[in-house]
Length: 217
Ligand code: G3P
Image: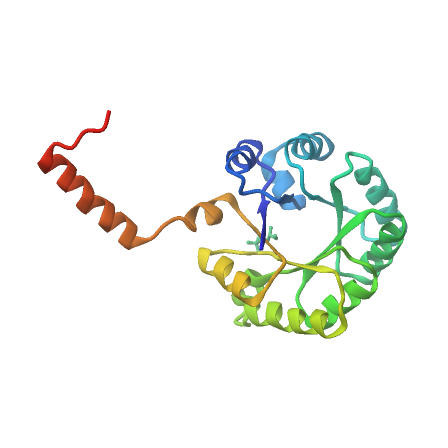
């Protein structure tokens, strides 16, 4: 499973990228707003740092303006994936951009039918939002499973990009189901390293190091 990092914070991306943990980056208008940076400037900086796809989202609601915005975003770098919402206008924009050879990430997906439409419209990535479904008492991981089944049934090559990931458990569950990509905030990716037995075991080793006066350097 590829790891995308869901942030526009340059320092956080750099730290994970230096460790080989970043296969791509996703942003959205809320993350850009949180960074306090200009969208074109910060997106270019991310594209220069990361080799994989960098999602940058359009902000218009009609297809004509979305397409113009998408074309402008695509010019930032070769690794841009233009992000469009899963609306009819978004699907029209997806088809037009993918026909032009631009990667497209269709976002705000909450149903298997929406994912099916995005694949038909030539999406490179579909972004089902797990956490926001969990928030309304619906199993977000079940949606990832359903999309995996449908895409495999028909050989769609649209990649399932699990989004709105809130926990390390979401990451391992997505990997078990076979999501192609999971995009998560830096804190969630770092939390994957944590285990209470690792902490307990290390504390025991350190107590013995102290007792026996073990030194290596
Ligand atoms: O990847 C989509 C993400 O940014 C939304 O996450 O936690 O706001 O639902 P969240």
